[in-house]
Length: 112
Length: 113
Image 1: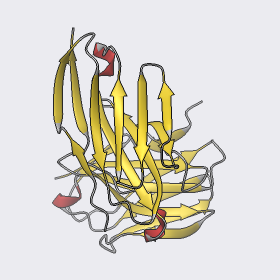
Image 2: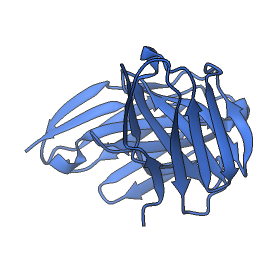
Image 3: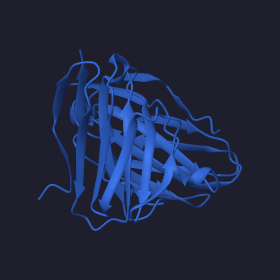
């Protein structure tokens, strides 16, 4: 019954590896987002898709690539992981960009 | 770039106290304002989405007002309870800028029993 789910919840990996985080929403929403929570607990938008179309692409390293196979899924792939990528990554969805966002539980990524 | 300021940064109150926080944002091109509640070790949870000047919304003991002309919103909690302890985030978005939310740093509320 989870509205927005993310897998994995925890991810520990070494520098230089490539990893993916998956996000799925069962709310029928059209818009999905990826956020990075920095060390000060500040939420920074990374990407947003609306009906599988990229609408927000903030200044993030091109090692980060989102993929939306359908409007219920928005995955985040990260190449050549760096120490500074360690953070909590949140996925969210909303019916419309104007409406409230529903967040997933977060994925805590630790790069060693 | 929107500048969102929330005050106070943190607040400690006693159970039963009523409290309020402020969110300030540039008023130009206003589109909507979101309030979220974020408990430790959980995910942000939407409280309100407000769009019209003068809007007032209420959910239980929590209410919010909006002034789009002067660029501020207040969040009120009546009779605070320990379970209200959380960070309260506001996030406006304007008509341009891809309508993305610009998140404030939040007000961290601790309610002592």
